[in-house]
Length: 368
Image (cartoon, rainbow, N blue to C red):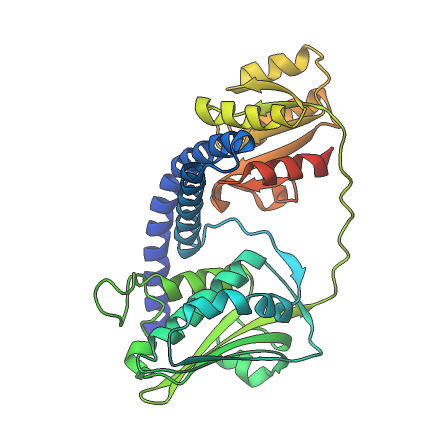
């Protein structure tokens, strides 16, 4: 038991070190990607048929996806949990998974017609399914079948006592099984280690299952692997079942005055341009003193859009000062990593960098 705890501590320290690296890189990298994406979308508004611009936008999106994978791997990715139907998400991914498969690979989905709901991040679930499907494909070099199962289960007391991180009670299971080469016990013990891979050089980064583990743990779920050489691999993820969702109705806004607070000059300009293109009156500030001065001038600000990580001031402290002047002031946070957030500040008023112009405008409308 002591050796197991020591190994868990070493793994936690390793992940924390990588998380620090990922967090430092993510903020600046996300800002650059947002600038590229925002200005490209503005250009596309006037030139819909420009394939070069579309290629730039696609590259920016791929860069954003890479950043999110890095943050998920480090378990610092910002998640937006919602009440979801796992079966619907998996079914929606059927067409996305088909191009992943190669000749000789089959896909079978077994989704129970009656199933509970879970509280999780949809993007995280989609990434889990895609990563596991790719791993399953690669484990079957001569062909085989990938089976994805979604069904309700009851986690018993005996299983919960024997496995750290899972509570007894009702769960929804997401299972991905393959008929591939399988793994021995020594390999299974290492599959979640960062950069560990059984694939040939150039075929994998060793981040796939580490990323899956990070997403699973951030969403309060539990993962279990069953594998034997020559008998394939089954990976089961157990999500606690929850009550159905009662989502609020989003009402579109009219025009409004918005204060944008961002210390990155180019990104601040990009956000301003996007909002002005959609008819909003936009004021900008690069630091706390400028923001406070603008608010004190009585300009009728209805919404503040602010980065959490400002150069000389914590954005949340600034928001408190602004709300001291205007208790009814609404704030929309921007950030690229979960480490920027306090648990009691996480709400729907949050944008995960990098985001598109469409996402920015939709979120602003939902708050006004």
